[in-house]
Length: 134
Length: 386
Image (cartoon, rainbow over all chains, first blue to last red; front, side, top):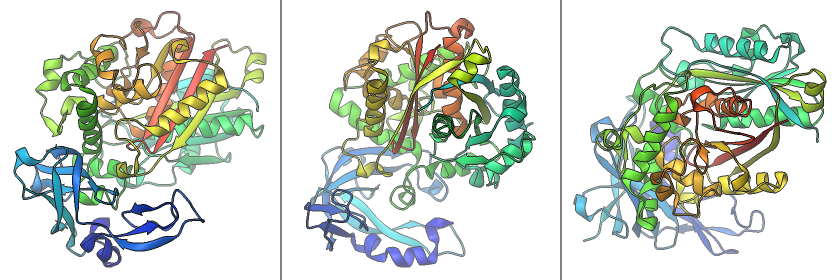
């Protein structure tokens, strides 16, 4: 299962554990995940590594009742698109929050959580989920 | 560039074909198309086949070779085209480009998907590949959930309601009843949709397209050659455009429009000197009810934000302001790779006046709009009766 592939997990630690992103010094845009080429400036871009802030606000959200492989036991769960303080957008689960607090505009902060454990031969995948800041 | 026309079509019923294999569906649609075009199979010079996820759904890749083999058309070149749910539309465009470039005079374009050999969860995972595996699927996103994120935003920005989205499904089912190829042959009510249970809020089960098996085939021919052959039902393709956008939803400038659709359709309108009001019918990509609302806005039929109200007022029903999805749209069934080809077949039928009870009156110009993923690929075709 691709979610739990060992080299993938290892490669993704900086991104999934502490939101390592990058930033183009030419067009002043932050990216998460890191991009190899700035989509705005292409080869004229100057990409440098940069951490993404751990807080942002919900732009849109949904409560998922029918899950794909590996998430069947977690339903219902919340997914949101979050605009981070550097304007980069992240899709992630919203956890440990009261249902009525999960709404557009709510401030959220990054938490470190288990994401999936589907493949008995693979690695348990950890990464980011978000929690509403009360 | 040479003009290209559709001269024949073949379509299997869309539904759960437990008794038929992937290759049998290809053979059925292929033979029907060749018979309908009244040509000999050996006059076909190349094949382009749209298929999204056969590897995950039936464990089979190398679909290009499989199609030519099944139809007894070896040794002509046969190529699989994949662009998620837009695979069929992009395959059609590949066939058009192959003829308009002067490389071939006659090609076959197919679309196929066999989705019921695996569990719903496995099919859902396979379809998820149309999104971003590393930043969407990994976090538990499903296709309904990605469209749900767009739907929520549309509701909050423009006041679109769940009932208005439900109306899209009601209208699609109503049209599908009159289409013998459609998966669902019954009407539903707004209440049925509202009570069908959330899949990913605000989208409910009946806001979603189903899991379907099906195949569709078109025979394309250079327009002048088609005229010389005396093929009276030929339909000319007057625009074929395509655009791309970020793979993941988080990369989009807006969640309430599909930039790829807007760019592709603008180019198609410019090329044909047509305006939205000139289009008599549109087969648009309504994989979810919200996608119908986004599309009628992005294609220019209604202003941004007014799609929900337009559907509610019946402006998109059969023979109204713009006839949307007379075939039943994706509620007719959504065998992903076949959908883009099926849309073109419906327009061929409509422009020839052979669509029976779902016929759009005086249909002269039709548009097909096929989307891949959550909007990362959009393909537009405009067709007219010659």
